[in-house]
Image 1 (cartoon, rainbow, N blue to C red):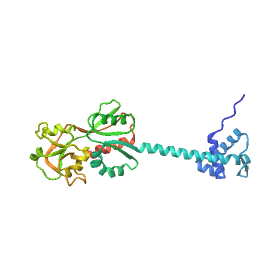
Image 2 (cartoon, helix red, strand yellow):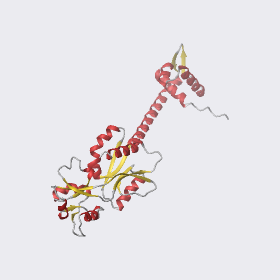
Image 3 (tube, rainbow, N blue to C red):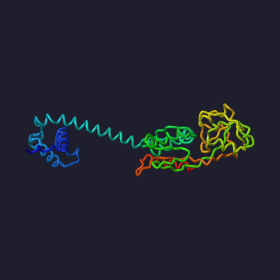
Image 4 (cartoon, helix red, strand yellow):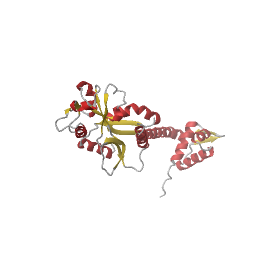
Length: 298
């Protein structure tokens, strides 16, 4: 038993255009092909269906009853298909342009946010989506951020402290240097007698004690909810806080006074990590390059 010939999808599409345009020439112009190519496709379709779809008379092409029955259904089908393909394309474009970034809350507020206008002016086709965390992470929170990156819940992680994971690669953005800020001018000689907004488990705490030549229990502290909130509490608590020196030019901080000649270095660096990939996304490459260039302009 001979199988029936397969109907050409391209021939159906050509027929739909010809029926909608009312002529083979108009269909050829819309499809960007020759009129003879349209004629051949229509003839092929008629042979496959075993019936005439157009009545040809002195170059006038009128639909036969069979053609009139087929044309509306085909037109609706191809219009639906075109809309579906356009939606798929738009979804794909959105995923390509969206970059999900996990980063410290103070880095976003005091350094990145004021510069986002510059980034979007260069890369208007890339959309950034942020999730923030405290700069000083414990092991549990650090592990959760790494898992988000590994399982593709985020695309980029800006953080302190090295990450050892064969599925991720990291690069240094800059070594962190902290300056002390207060609500009023202070000399270095006065710092040991002041109250500091810092958590005893903060990695900077023992370094600060050594810098001030203080023994255990001699450093007066107030435990802030986070490193970011510590800066907001400086004036209210009449206490000092440590801030990444790159954040000092931020417009919201001129009311705070930095202590001259006092810089705290813990050996920590700000790093950026992403999944290992042979073909990283355009957005990822663009944002990392922009970030590195702007940070090196200090």
